[in-house]
Image 1 (tube, helix red, strand yellow):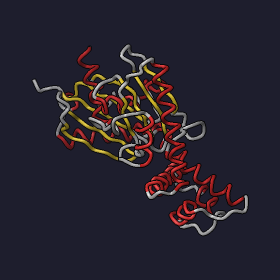
Image 2 (image 1 turned 180 degrees about the horizontal axis):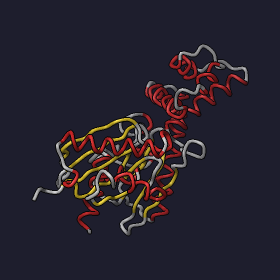
Image 3 (image 1 turned 90 degrees about the vertical axis):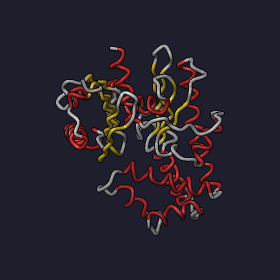
Length: 305
């Protein structure tokens, strides 16, 4: 009998990844494609996209679906908390003989980063959220409400604070600061009023474009720009406060911390500031990818069955 294999499906905000691992979590194959977030491309489109990439990944590696003992899946915008049935319906046609483990993009990132279920994950990318699971099995989330209701400290939040600062100064009759001028230059806009056309054009996702401005802020902060450093400090304070809130609610003061998301996966002004505020010895680095975390979660569920 062939050794069991495990699949992990990670649908982050911008990309879908499918990975297959063996019992030791060694990667056999990983493939990726564009977003599978149902909030972006619709549930039917996301379902089709996920199924096609799972099939293509197995075919590329010459792996029969019957060899996949269990598969974990976490999709942004389709958490197990409210979309369990949809997640199961998505995978069952392509992996009919596998144990299916629906999860969330936050949980699989936590399991991948720490190599276990217990701990706290701080995510800061386009959006932000803090997710944690205590040793007694209690799991909670703080934040992750989306850009209209929250996502403080995220890339979108940093970008929109930058834009609001520019227009506030303009309305008061002030000129552009160094950071404001750099922003308009990056966007190839000549006047502050030009931000309106840039922001509301309909052919691109507004949230992603605004979140992209966070990179400019981080670069300017690294160069010593005071305005950029104030924005970074405010973002770090928001995120650190959410981590402390979750620690308190879980009654898990010694919880290991994991970082995830595009703003925290490198050493930059924000990740350094949060690391300092949380009094961590260094920026946490993940043991495994979220996709491998989904596969590990599936393996754990399969082993416990």
